[in-house]
Length: 565
Image 1 (cartoon, rainbow, N blue to C red):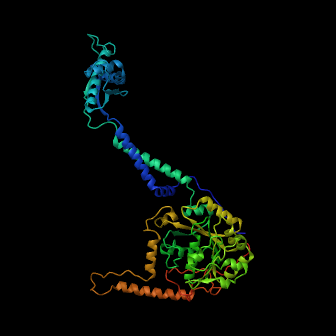
Image 2 (image 1 turned 90 degrees about the vertical axis):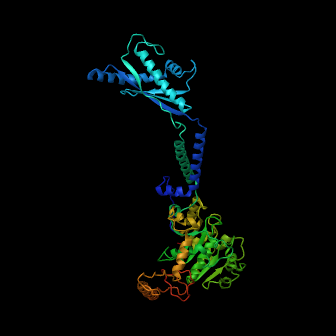
Image 3 (image 1 turned 135 degrees about the horizontal axis):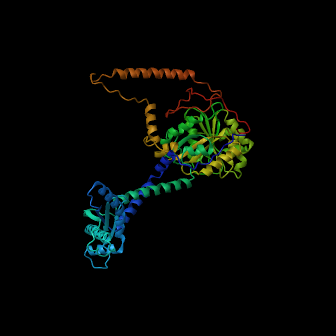
């Protein structure tokens, strides 16, 4: 039986990396939320009335302060009286006196609001007035202080609030104005700057709240970490979305565009899936249709053949075959006729422009695809072809039908292809469970159709700004492989036309290293145990490989036990 695939659920907490990833993924939403917040607060500020504020101060004096003791006693008494006097301004009688001080008609209301404040232990009473105009605020504050002074004189002489002072009685506590009201130059409210800051903070908070809700309800696989958490499996490659892979006819190993280096990296990673028992028969499948598994199966077979590896691509999708159409081959005779015994395998295999790549089309679509693919003839065919070739099987998706699960149990393992930001996490988990139930071995996952400018986001969740993804790597790689070298600049003391001695010595050292490397690789290369059908090879140069070149091998030829492990 194959290894048991473990599953874990997503953690609910948000790390710093998740926060950065969420910010990068939802930056448009955040900008929109901030813009809405600023617009709302700007509109709110515009609709609010303009109110001006002004204040004046009065000093509480107690006693005659003829001695130090009297001065201290008077100061203590004034500190206790100040907060009491501040409450007088809220009385109706005092407000009526304010109206009188302003010269308004008796019984008319105040042109604004006025209040007083006196701290405990302090000797100052501050009167603050708010009105619709600067002049009204200033006049109202001064009138409030004068009315408060009159009320204090009346009360301290023994008279009632709103009345007249008692004649002949000199109050011991007095209220003296020490600061007149000023003319305000700007409105007290609305405060445009403060409101805009509140709109910015509120919009940003709303944007992050919506981003967090979106993150919680988003169940699509977007990052390598999602695959590793859900399936406990490695990601063998991230393939960017390119126009070359979307063409009707397969472009060939040297026309893959920006995806060329990513597919070569997939080929290289397959060598290290199982070093002692490398896979020889590989099933390419996906969760649902349209995730690019047929295109990747064909591209992987082409780069394997271009690296000098004898490869057979079998179109095992007997429901919707695509390989023959992509390669412009005759697909009427193929796998179904071979399994039925009507045609021999040698007659059904078709050669391609790649010398080491042969293709077995699907043939006529049968009424019972699952029975044919799960038969003993199919197992014997895979075992026979994998002795001298690496066999790639383009299988149907895992979730709709059972064909891919049956094939995975017969082969060395399966590669699961998923569409980045489209395949759902539940679908990925179900694929892992299906492979575990049939005893299939999951070699790894390929994240396909990744945005070219966001490949690093798929790997790490946030980008490092390395150009435009694989396009930059491909250009640098081609320049290095073609032998281009940066020209050494002439020193200022050297005559024109003379090369730098450092550049010449560097060139000689580079030539010596190249000669040594060539000799070393030729002498230390391991011989394949299976003749021309060695294990998966690696040739990272984008140029076509020499079929006679000795390439390094990985491990011995794998056997295929009946349990599919």
